[in-house]
Image (cartoon, rainbow, N blue to C red; front, side, top):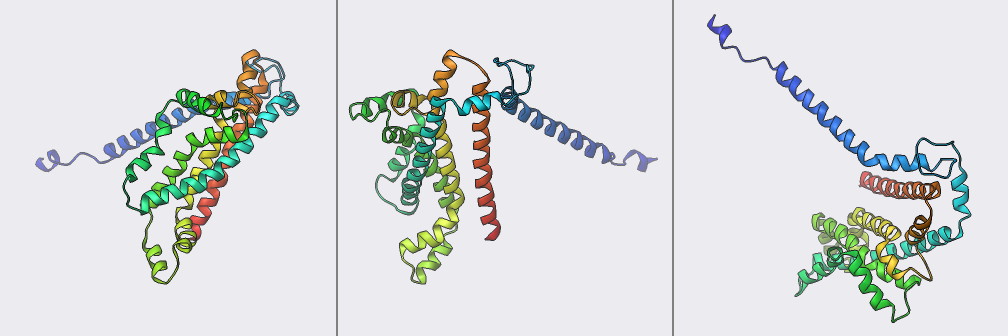
Length: 278
């Protein structure tokens, strides 16, 4: 009788409780993802509407707005400007951002913390204030509405991402291979090119993709420095929706979503393949 009274509680109830908690936890995560991604799905659906309104349900299924998008001169010109500036920014940010991150991580000098904070500062300043400041600087130089002026403006808000992602990889990388290469007679540039750069490549690629996407998507600063002359795609989209609202904007937005997703998947594929070969 006493043995029966002092038996431990069955373990099945504890396990079942954990299973229930795990199930609701996964259900909550799925619900949050659906909530966050639902606007993207709605945009994709609306882009195939045959009617002229951004309303559900669809009036019909059609590729009409994709065809009209390709024939829309201002939007296509804005797309080309944003694409060119984004590529320029990605390349320039790679050279400058990686160099700055390497200097900050591997050298000890006065003002090291100030230099690190300087390249983080643009992220702390509201983009409206930064856009106005850039306008006041670039306008007297007649650089507003030019590729150079837009690139300078976008550089200020994109290079911190390259610096940070590269710096994190440098701080967490094992320096034993670099020391071994120096012992074997390799010069500083050879060590960086053959040893350090392959190790930090995931951070470098991630920073370059982020710089390109942020430059391509930048709207507030572009409204200040690219509202005339060379106009970027976000500015052209803002002008378009100011006077009309039809599925053409949804079609363009869906294409931009697919391009951003493709860029992320390509980088993930490259980084994953290189990681598997190490």
